[in-house]
Length: 396
Image (cartoon, rainbow, N blue to C red; front, side, top):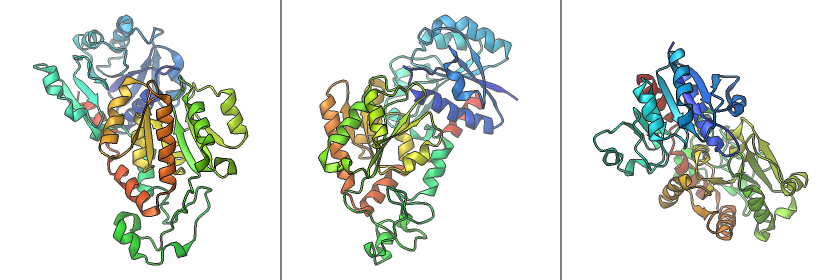
């Protein structure tokens, strides 16, 4: 059995999405009969993968990858590993060149396209990657290119959730669930079964009846601000939502579901919100698709979570706080899929205002409009991206 290495780090600075997407690719490799070993600068990665995969800790500085190259090459050669996936913004063209010149075929995840990396393959699953003229950018030394949404590595749970649901809030058993989890049986909302069939055949397929939303019935809001939330944005966004009078949050019927990673530190204010019943903290959890699927609307940085929300079909709004997030945010916004609230580094008040306005807009949408928008999101992701990446790695 061949072995493929994955070089990735996890800590308070590196977004959790890096390790998550690598785990997804590793899962596809494993299902195809390939062994996987994770390589990291330190042992922060261990809790994420120790139960499923082998690992090797280099004991180096995750910000200085070129300094680890001899240790890494010695390990790869000792283990007779000839293929590696590298996921780090601190990798340099020289780092990749050293791997390739020493017999290690390398796939590099390049979200930025700022430098030419002499890798065997370049992966950029950003929706706009196909329009970035990679062939012209690399000139005569064009690597194998894996570009665009067909290579999005979505975890299996999100693919399964997409198949189970038929639009935001429509459960796979053909029942509609309200925000408190109780099955809604208000048959008077729709008297004619053809109404849904005409508006959305997919949503109505096999359904005996459809149940509508009451106006302003937003009850569960999904929020994530990155695995570690290094800028403290969760408290800022939650406070803004709770203060908005239009959402009637103080009635106690609405909750914000905060998804956080292993390195997230709960602030005193957020802890108060949790104790008061306004916030539910989901930290370092595995059932993310279920949590997303239980929510009416989502707020997220532009990144891997955007694609996962699309797969589940949750109406969302994105924001950015890092340069590499901007291409995805703008693509989704320009194509009319997910609106963009703005950059927290530039104008925090503008971003918060946009987020609140979007939540209010979703609160007053009727059922058919939500279903239509939800299914439009789900059609973006076919769930086979990780398998396609794994196939190329094995061919390399």
